[in-house]
Image (cartoon, rainbow, N blue to C red; front, side, top):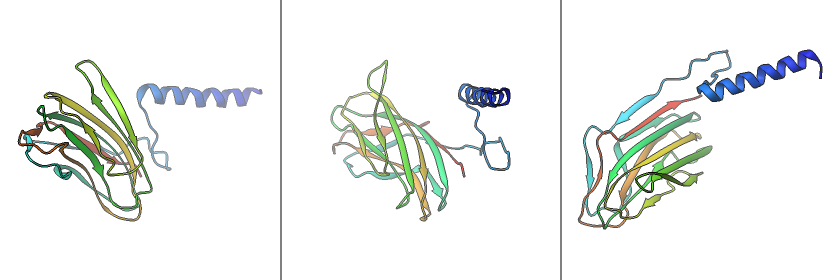
Length: 180
């Protein structure tokens, strides 16, 4: 291997290693290294449901998605359920997205998270059985929107209809940014 090829390979590996370690990303075709800003959405107060198994869009954790643009997002949701209802949730998006990748993790016990699903379509519902506990759901995803503008949002409901209260706690959030 000649010296210039080794130098180029070393430089490429160095940039890759630094990017992975420091979470540095290169954006834009014009040499811009400034990532687009995150937009943060927070639940200001507890949101509660009773006797409602219909998955509906959350009024706060939602954002407009332009046609033919790609978005990355993450959510940390703090739910409290009772011993009878549980919770189910999904990410909804405009029809006919180009590509969808959504990863979800739920704290399965006091000490660990389980990551049961990688969705490749919007509206893929996940559930957590009744636990009579407070737990977190972490969702991260990327949606390459197709030709339909619309909204990307969290939707949630009781897993089983019941009179007991399911609560999405204040401080639960979603953050997003457009990456192209």
